[in-house]
Image (cartoon, rainbow, N blue to C red; front, side, top):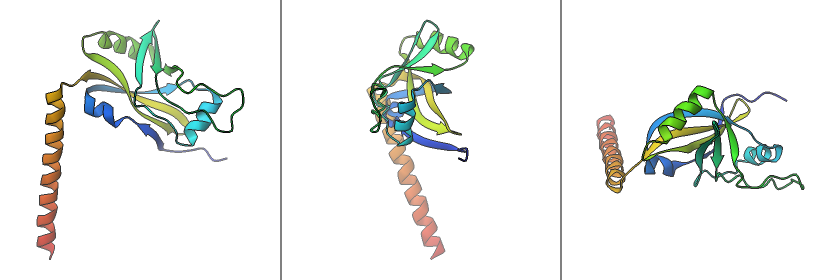
Amino acid sequence: MAKEKGRKLIAQNKKARHDYHILDTYECGLVLMGTEVKSLRQGRASLADGFVDIHDHEAWLHNVHVPEYSQGTWTNHSARRKRKLLLHREEIDKLESKSQETGHTIVPLALYFKDGRAKVEIALAKGKKEYDKRQTLREKQDRREADRAMSAVRRRQRA
């Protein structure tokens, strides 16, 4: 069997980028059971309610939904169990100190396979206020309108 290369996205948390200012991102490994890996290879997971908690100098991923493997037996995993994250000690210490500041949290952004290994991208984030969310949407719409106008001008110039 050939070794996988590259990055294969399984799930991403688009809502996190809408609800939070992303301050710093980290790529980390996951401690998984065999049936979880098989379920992830089928492309089934949800990061919607996920968050990271640091307890006893270990990082844990909570509320990430990985459905049970359909061909699994009694050894199947529970869908919302907490999973240990694999990070360097310095990274865990930095995340722990930063996440204890008011308004900061650690959220998962993406779950993917990188060269055959399951990885999760987590971010140190600060919650956005409602007016920040509206401002972000307004900027996105303005950028989209400007791109449309520029492409229309280019089409006219070619014709």
